[in-house]
Image (cartoon, rainbow, N blue to C red; front, side):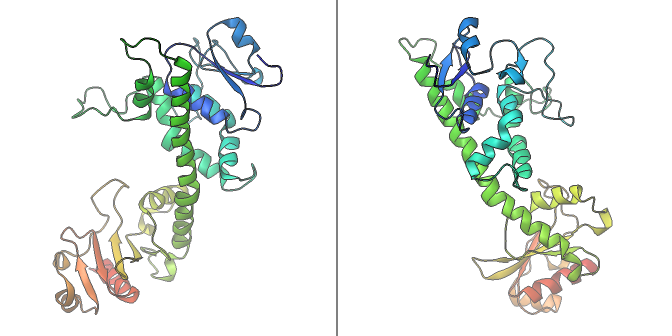
Length: 327
């Protein structure tokens, strides 16, 4: 081993998604970007490495040893989590803020960093920890209706040699796994910072200004459309918004149709049940018939389920929202 090139060590033999992700994250850091990757279980080899992940039987951050297999390991991402960390989670917990900052070109003091860091763990890294530790997504008494062999752990597993393959270069295959999960991790970081976070900022602004539209606070108007459901529900909890002050309808412009939409907020982000669907008499009615029925010009449609409707103008959509609240 070269004395000038750092070494990242992990175990030899069959490889898994968690150490693949751990290694790929470390390679984003300046001190490890040119590091050699060594796969071994030999204690003498591991002792010479600059950082060791997923092997070695010890979790000692000050010595850059990050294994999670040893008896008595109890580390989670935080007090609100009950899934133990894998090597991916360990590396992310200790280096994740810096890794995300390097990918985005942000400083470590950027106020946006903590939000992205937390979101990436919840939406990406946590699954690696859960799968590696054998934690099911749902109660085992529920029989899955189908199998999904396309998650990252399954795809990494398939890069390992088949039982009847011979003369396989494990190092080459492992580096393929590192590249694959690393690319997905980077893409998730970029999406979260460049698309998800700006959307959150739009919803924050809309929430703050909602009383300008109606004293109840039940109508939110987005300056620009973005995927808003998840943000709205998260922000309601974060800001401890009382149930009687939470939004009922969200208004936004449909850029493709150049019309305005009024959408009922769902009970939960994934629910089809609305907090207050648009009035039943409006449902399934379109165009002039809708305008005649509501007394609001510019009617376009109301969905048969009442979860969404449309008007030609912002003012028209606002009138629909106010009438629907009073209905």
